[in-house]
Length: 272
Image (cartoon, rainbow, N blue to C red; front, side, top):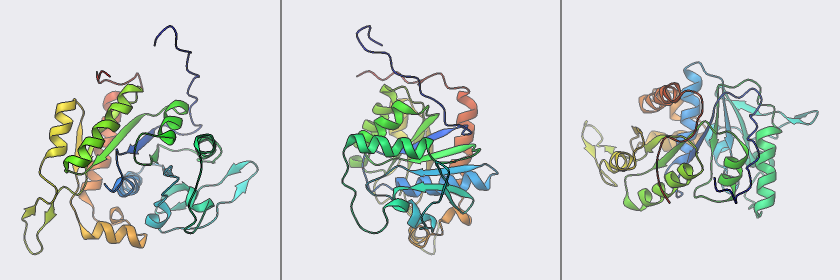
């Protein structure tokens, strides 16, 4: 830190929450929320206590994908999270239902993110998964500056357009000293019906190459599977059934956290 820069306020932990994992992407349309939802369910099926915070306040899709749309109750000054599929949930869509757009500026976003982090009675959690909006804007900065993130997962597709923005997200997390747990490549390939043949739709291996070139971990490839889309649209995510890719992702996240140990800052060296 430069001697001319003011000291940052301490990042107070969220009571009862052991690990805060941000799931982000440089751009929309890469399946970031799908990954966050199915990762949460897979972690819960492994025996963990899991919460999912939908911080994508402009496009909150978690309630649809998790098959629940109710109004949370309050107990005293604490909002009680909803729960489905073994995961505790909070989303702006619970408070602003329907198709009405949210037109808010930075200070209001800061306030609602703080409320979701510290005004919700999350209880005891092993993991609080935070589904970020795409990009590198106000919500991401508010979260990074105010909460002690354990690590971040960056979701991309194999296309170069997606990877270009994913690299920006990786740089953002690195510059603010958030541990990057790894890259997830979504929509990696399509299994040709009736065969075991993999068909590359958006390219092949680009996510792994990007991870290697940037010195970060590559976590998993996820197929372009119609069942993943159907599960999200019907509120019955594919991780509720046999979803080996998401189970593998959950296990690798657990392993990464065990490997990095107590949070001591980013292990990457990315210059401006």
